[in-house]
Amino acid sequence: MTDEGQGDPQTEPPAGHYIVCGGNALAHRLIVELIEHYEVPVVALVPDRTRDHGPRIEQLAVVAEVLEYSTVSEEALRAAGVDVARGVALMDGTDQENIHAALTARGRNPGIRIVLRMFNLRLGEHIEKLLPNCAALSGSATAAPAFANGALGRPNSVQVGDRYLYVAYGEEIEGNQICLVADRIDRQDLGRLRLLPDTGGRAAEFIALARRLGSEGPIELGRAAAPEAAGADRGEVAVLQALTSEPPVRIPWWKRARWWLQDVLRYFTSVRLRLVLTTALVAVLVGGWVIWHDNGSLGWAAYLTLLDLAGAAQPDQPGAGAPGGPWTRLAQVVVTFCGITFVPVATAIVVDMLATGRRGLPRAPGSRTRDHVVVVGLGNVGTRVATLVHATGVPVVCIERDPQARGIAAVRALGLPVLVGDAPLESQLRRARVRYSRALVAVTTDDAANLEAALEARAVRPEVRIVVRLFDDDFAHHVYATLGNVASRSVSYLSAPAFAAALMGREVLGTLSVYRHVLLIAELTAAPGSGLLGRDTHEIEGAGGVRVIAVRLARRPQEYQWNFADRARRLGPGDRIVVAATRSGLARLNTLEPEGS
Image 1 (cartoon, helix red, strand yellow):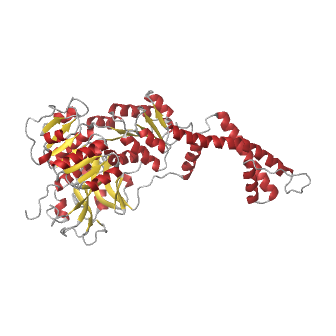
Image 2 (image 1 turned 180 degrees about the vertical axis):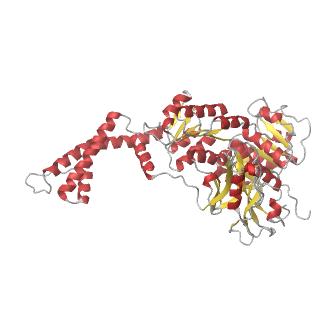
Image 3 (image 1 turned 30 degrees about the horizontal axis):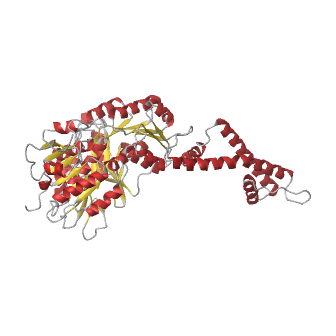
């Protein structure tokens, strides 16, 4: 297929539209997001109508036009009406290809809004500085924390100023509520997420009432509880809370010590070798104790033991009057001969580590690996998930079928064990010691493969925590209904709202997953001509789906005022607000007309 003649539009694209380039899941979700929540015209530019998500995009009847071009060339952008478009989103291709397409679009339309999907976030920061009115985001970086935190059993968080916002449920709710997200969250209900009205500072009363009613919809303060609803409690309360530090992963010190010892013992693969080294270690410790007992000085005993272990023993001469009795001399002989065993082994370990790194060989998990996280799939998302989990100190074992996957090199640089090859998944999971793992994260691009990994892990260890990547909502609903201990996340569902908001010029600080729902944390500026200028908090929240959780006044830009008390104060030029919003709620803020227009 060539570019010529494949995508000539039958009609002229509408002026003021948005162009979405790509045929992957993220492009599909972004188109749906723009159409359903922002209600803007969209022209889709796909590389192939018949592959990936091309057929699904073409079935979206409300898309203004679907064009097919193998590359996002100048001809393709011209056919999509880039000259009169308001924005373009580059969701497919490599970082280099997306940068080239962005420069081409900017050359034809200097005022166009550009959003790029990039894996290299550092490079993206430089591109944002180079191209005005441009945002570079990473779908994997946006979604990976939800997968990693799901595996670790801790809430996902977003940093705002000096606080970390996260969503707590049920018994985890403490006394630092920012706002009530919903009075009922059913993990099997994939409907819309609701943000409830202002609690008037009575969050505790609101939560208690919500728990007592267990109703289907939002609860208003002061509403009488129906007798038949009392004690129903059919779901969980979800509350947005704040901490002064990121939610920690609570790991006992003895577990960390055990992981360190396991990491050392992985080099001793032979049972006989482990037996010999253990015996030698016991002999060294006993010899050191004998020397200490005879000489009475712990420092002197340690000094002699270490030197003897290194082979630097100085034998006593007959009649020289050397200190120490016969037991000390015997201990020195034993320690010296044990050093003959330890020194070559230590040298072999160092050489093996250096040689493995130079040959580019990822190491395999040791026979004592326990309480670890198994990550299946080392694409962009899997690599970031493995990195995030590893940063907390929890052991990670990775599985990847494609030996050419670039994620292998990234996790190898971290020293993580990797199982590579197309062996049966059951065999790979067994080698990854999933029976002794704390969690499994399946993040390949294939829903069926992810479900297979989850079922295999569940069959081996029913209580293991499982987080799977699923695109299809119906499929995820059935998984939730059938497997109670499986958490489902969708990369495109988590990241598409951030891309859509960026395309509209909104600054999204992060996303919080509430099961498969998405809560957006965004910071907005009341600029001249903006619909926020001159409005107070009540007016901003009036349409629903938005809660103002902090305000930064122009005269004190560094100070975040949480749960702003003066809710009747109107925003002036330069004032900034931090909001927690649903996808539709944030989209409605984009349609606010300037005050007095």
